[in-house]
Length: 51
Image (cartoon, rainbow, N blue to C red; front, side):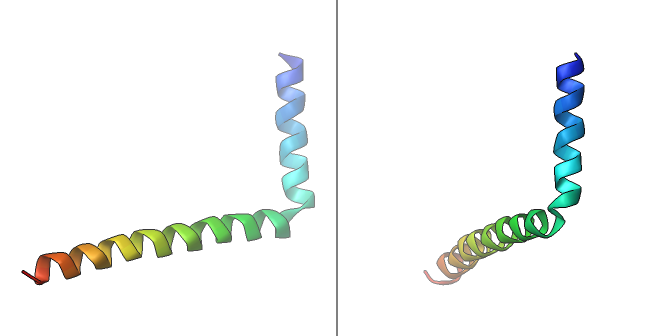
């Protein structure tokens, strides 16, 4: 159990050290998912409104 505790402790320490990299990765995923699902929704709206 101590190795699991150590692993989480080190993971959160590294998140703090590399906050800018973590923020960049989160933003990149958010933007790509937003564009992907936005495209899907837009395509569905166009499909429904054009017979």
